[in-house]
Image 1: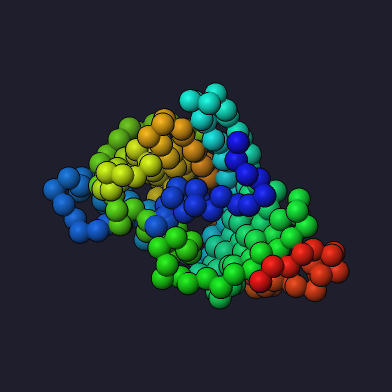
Image 2: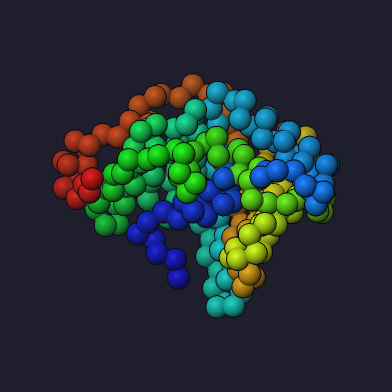
Length: 222
């Protein structure tokens, strides 16, 4: 089972466009697939800010384990706040704060946005551009929307990921669903809901209030 004491942001980054993180173009890449991915990336990255709810499903068929939960995310510039697994992770542009109420602790770390495994909104919108080949997949009707899927396949033959299906709403150019399929056929599915853009967001949402958690007697690890 998944460790609920920490947020699985590796899943987030590998799924959400970047959801987040193209080496050089090659003949294996479908021009139509590239176009739809580029359109979604340019559309979503152009917003001043973006917030959404999402459903998360982990379907581990080998172990006969299914886990379902919901979360939400706010993105603005290179800052973000994500709530998932009962915990919160926020990035204020300099440091990452992971708040875990279950353990009554906060983990604070310096974040280097140039590091490959560091999640940022810009990577959220462009992950498909590095390390994958891609081609058009199915067009499906989901939630009353026409969703065009693009299949991404890792270039690295040693990758634990077999493929990633990115489903894009053909009307809005928004990412609707991302399905990561592991080599063991485990599927991790993220479905976006209630996407809102260019909202009036109080900048305090990206500011960590250390005193608040000190008063709650949380252990603060720096």
